[in-house]
Image (tube, rainbow, N blue to C red; front, side, top):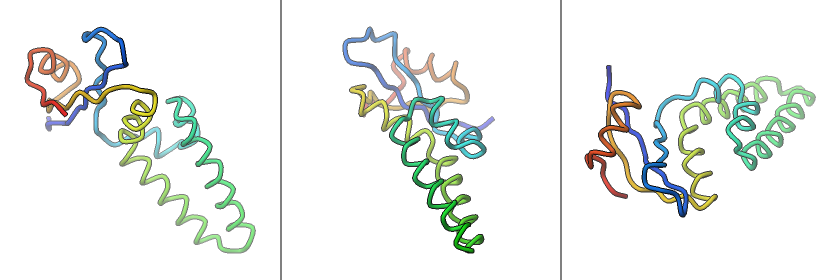
Length: 123
């Protein structure tokens, strides 16, 4: 197994044990179903932007630029797949959550144990 990076976030006024660890990894759901993933993850502004991109892709396709439409669609999907965790962190920050720092671990259980044992790094 490889080591992954997790960032720790806490809502304002929440107890320290309610920390949320976000895994910085590839998001298959965001790559395969971008709009549904954004809605499921409650990234409302991202979902609205994706609707605009879908409209632009449709317009490019209708204008006869199918290759450009496909390239735009693939680019958006790749960005979402690679940066899905960044959107989750941004969304939490906009909602008033604090970024507490990060921890490196092999899986989420190990990351949680490492974080609460004080092995995480403060932001």
